[in-house]
Length: 355
Image 1 (cartoon, rainbow, N blue to C red):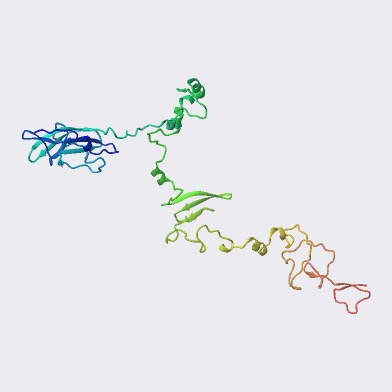
Image 2: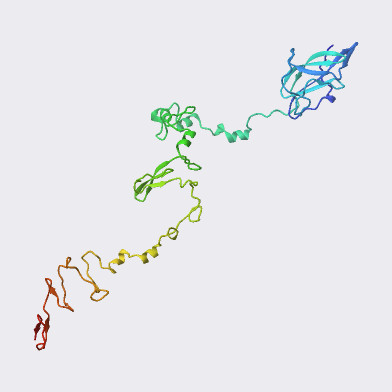
């Protein structure tokens, strides 16, 4: 028995695909009696030519089929088998008929000559002109030599704002190498606090510079028994969660005024307390050197002393002096001096009368 691989007449050729799959078609003819007859319902299996190895690439039963055929496949009543493939190839068909027997023949899968050409990975002329510098506008060699530095460059030809290869290698990490003096991303995440979304899992100590003072801020541990002046200590709270949820019932960015912390406003403080600018005109300073512009008087007659027996004023200057009782000297009362126009009727002992 023989198999004849012959293309069908043009009127019966299977349709071609716009996807330009490769195509092959054969009519299975087997000998019967004294002639050849079409082998309808023959089971066909593709192999690599001259072997019993099944053809490895997928084969399709139509130009636009999406599922590959499972072999063997049966021929139709005309004995025709048509196959499509994604790429050109040569295979050998084996046909088995229950009556006519077994036969093999070679079939080539070839591209469709009428299909549209495959897309070429290239630019059109307008695309090329837009992407590249046209030769008619490029610099000549002399112009380029005058415009650009020529390689290889020497140290004296390199402008100051550029680095030599040695300087660049020392300044930057070479591509494909792992520098030893930098941190990887996981190392950085473990070593530093991220600006966004970072969390602190242990004590954090840093410096906070206030107006005219440097303070140490320690977070996450209890303060020491004797903290340094101006140091700030922030602990984990009382164990109830740590984070501050609100301040005076306020959340978000909270701005506290004087009333929120029990303090006086500037106006209330000025009204409540003595200001240095008005003190000199209101009160007598305790230090010497000031001059009185008013009078000094006690709140109750004959109830307040000026000085004591142990602490006495050194000297008194006065223009006039008036006493209810005679003054004393050395602890002894001095005689009363009376100036009159005539002698008294009953002078007291020790009194002095002048008339």
